[in-house]
Length: 52
Length: 241
Length: 228
Image 1 (tube, helix red, strand yellow):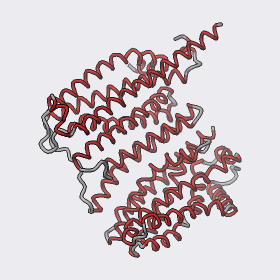
Image 2 (cartoon, chains in turn orange, cyan, yellow; image 1 turned 90 degrees about the horizontal axis):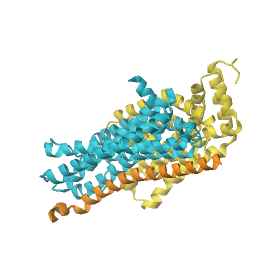
Image 3 (cartoon, chains in turn orange, red, brown; image 1 turned 180 degrees about the vertical axis):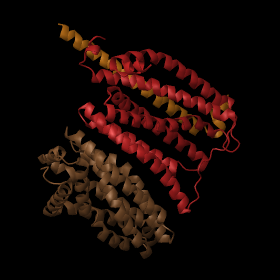
C-alpha cells in the first residue's frame, strides 16, 4: 500500500499531477454551477419585482 | 433526424435537453474515470525504463488530446458563426474556451512534472511543448477578446475570426518547429517516441481519453446553460423558467 | 469614395493618402524604429557584451525586436481612421474592402517594415553577426515584415473598436507571429553557419503568399464587425 503511494519514489511528481487534474476538472464543473445558481437567483428576484 | 438537430439549435430546447443529459454524463464520466484510474494506476505494470513516473501519461495524453480537439471544435463553431450566425454556436464556442485552456494548461503542467524526473528538465523548447504553449496563448487571446467586447453577438464574430485564424497556425507551428530542429541538426532532442505499448498501458489511456471527452460534454453543457441564461435574460423562455 | 474611380485608382489613392499621412506624422512612425534599436541595444547591456554569445543570438534578438516594433506600429493602421470616421467610408465604398485594406497594409509596410532593411544590418553588424548571414537577414526581413503587417492588420481590425485594444492586440497577434519568427531566425542561424537556407526561405514565401491572399479578407470581415 505504501508502495502505491510512493510511486517508486516519484510520488512528488505523480500525485501532484493527478491532484492538479482533479482540481482543474472540479473547478470547471463547480464555477459554472455557482454561476448558474446565481443567475437563477437574480432572475427569480427580478421576476418577483416585476410581478409586484 | 434533421428536425431534431434543428430543434437542438434553439436555445430553450438546448437548455432543457442539456439539463437532462448532465446527470447521465456525470455518472458515465465518473465510471470511466474510476475504470481508467484503476487500469492505469493499479493494473498496469511499472514501465521498464521509467518506473512508476510514467503513470502521469494517463492524464497527460488525454489532456493534450482534448486541448487540440476542443480548439478544432471551436474553429468549427467559428465557421458556423460566420456563415450561419447560429446563436448556439456562439455559446458553444465561448463556453468551450475555458475548458480547452484548462486542458492545455494541464497538458503543459503534467508534461512538465513528467519531464523533470525523466529527462531532467521541466521544460524544453521542442515542437510539441512550444506549440502547446502557443495554443494556450491562443485560448487566452480568445477569452480575452471576448471579454473585451461589450456586445456579445459582435464578440462572437470577432472570436470566430480569431479561432479560425488560429487554427491555421497550429499545424504550422507544430510542424515548423519539428522541421526546424531536424534541419538544425544541432542539439539532440529527446523526443518522446511512443513505442508499441502493451494493452495494459494504452487501454487505460483510451478510457481516460473517453472519460475526458464525456467530461468536456458535461462541463460544456453546464457552461452553456449559464451562458444562455445570461444572454437570453430578457427573452420569454427564460421568464417562463 | 466615389465609384467613378476604378479599383486600381482607388488602391493607389488610398496608398498615397496613407503615405502622405505618415510623412506628415514622421515622429509617430519613427518611434517604433527607435524602439527597435533600443531593444536590441539592451541585450549587450544586459548580457554583458560577450561577442560569441551576442553573435550567436543576434538573429533571434533582431527578429524578436522586429516583432515587438511591428506590434507597436500596428495601431496606426486603422485607429486614426476609426476615430475620424474614414474607416466607415472605406467600408461603405463600392470597391471590395479587402483590396482597400491591402492598400493600407502596403502603406504600413512601406513605412514600418522597409526601413528595417537599412537599420537591421547595421545592428546585426554591431552584434557581431557573421557577414555571410547578412544577405539572408535582408531576405528574411524583406519577406517577413510584410507578413507581420498583413497578419497584424487582422489583429488590429479585431480590436480597433475596443478601449484597451492595444494590450489585447499583443496577446492576439504574437502567437500568430511565431511561425515567422521561427523560420526567419532559423534561416539566419543556418546562414551564419554556412548551411543551406532555401527550406526556410520557401516556408517564409509560402506564409507571405498565404497572408497576402487570405488576410485582407479576414481583416475586412473583422473591420466590418468592429465598426458595427
